[in-house]
Length: 197
Image 1 (cartoon, rainbow, N blue to C red):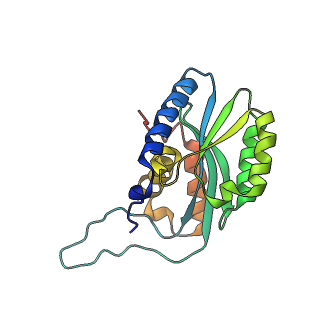
Image 2 (tube, helix red, strand yellow):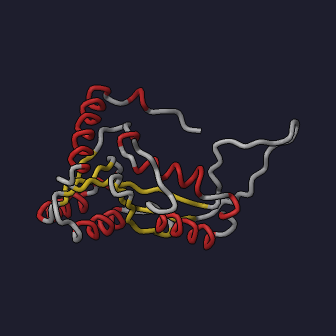
């Protein structure tokens, strides 16, 4: 269990960015810009169960095993209920970040803003160098303040996948898990929806 890091953040900066984000969301609703939320999340064979029930005096036992896993690196467009990204075996790195953002940059038809946190793989020098090229393609990176994960709405997608959409029975093998991740992300916006209102 992880305790909250909320106490470590700058509340003034948090409130300022929250109001800026509201403006960006409004501009995206009015189709003045495209707005994406970027992040990565790891998936493995240890199921994420927020709570469970068991008979009195018995301990709940879930099927779990230590395993390598997959990292999904992606972009969420809240207005269009659209996800795009890639799945990688093992941990992601800055090359994965560049690949996903470069794919988006090639699709830009108007000013596009990508909201992301300050993870090391997001702020690596090679990503910063690419950011100058992406600006020419109308793609701009916007980093949220530290310790403010709730400002990055893609975190809600990861939570829904891990705690609600991926079932324990779909974590019996890495292949099965990978197929389920891909199925859910391909169905996002149709069979799987999130109300951000």
